[in-house]
Figure 1 (spheres, helix red, strand yellow):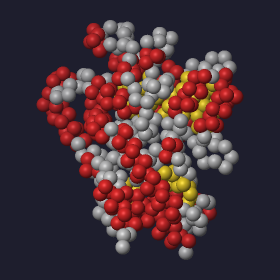
Figure 2 (cartoon, helix red, strand yellow):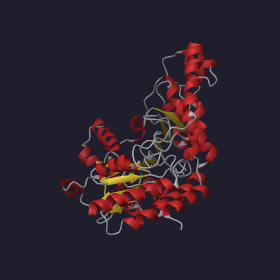
Figure 3 (cartoon, helix red, strand yellow):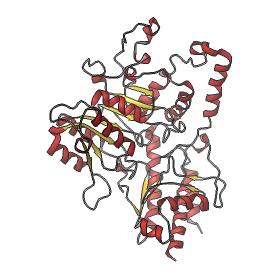
Figure 4 (tube, one colour):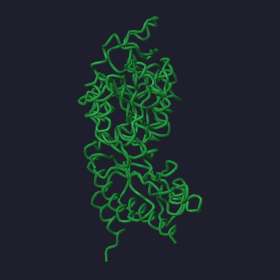
Length: 435
């Protein structure tokens, strides 16, 4: 007789992914040797090739010293250029529109210097109410920087009554009603809390139709869903590379600026040594001469030891391809969703991520009913449930307090068996709490 676990293993044999390219952490609980790692939406796993990449650069530093800028196997002086084309392919951009630099929120600030230009009544910044806190802090501080009241300048769009996610129609309705007061729309491409994939091209067109600029935080979208930033006419975007891009904790981020803005002399930006034309950089003149590319938004010389893991990861995405990853993601996430549907009816768990595969990436978010009462009764909050999954069953998920547990079957390395383990563990924990 075939068991549900047997079926999960059968699916893995038929649809194996690329798990062999990654280090899988050992389990700290349960009966399996490896972790069922479903937290790649928070921190991706380490590619096996990353260590060799770092050692190679360390050896170049040790043996060449300063000459490594020109004589290393991958010379350091133009190193960031090795990342430009694969990063552009990943997000559907032109190489001239793409640069890897800094960290996500730093890039958002640098881009808002250029693209948040309040004037007259057009001062508002539109974000989603469930935006990641760093984005909320960033836009509020930008409002204050311009002498504006963040409480009235920043508009937080909430889901309609009874809904868990913000519908595209809700954004369009607000822009239709209040668009003449909106300077900037800045939303998450995939919402960090609910896993909802926003309709990026439709919202971008609607923002432009009312005269606003439109930017996107792609922290949970890059490497998760296919993107076409250039064709969608997005004004700017930024993303991190430590989640789905598997480049390590605190890894370098990316930025996109549409080509129609690159040579616009009216656009202001902060500049530094790496903003200027590399052909004349060492003339050491006091005036910057930036090229009409996204490189003009760079400020400092790139950190080579931090760029190596990003280059390694982007090589994997180039080899596998986002189209193939998206197809496997839909199969894997659909399987997980089906398993969850079997255990969540009449249980204190509810999937809040949209059921439509076109409205989600690979993350499914579970909301716990009455987390305060459950914690008071000893049954635990989202953090307690996540802790028990890890230590009792070897399943790594993550929690967003007070009431959301997130499961992300990453198509590069997650398995159907990982999904089965997670749902089997949840079913046992929920049954135990019900007794």
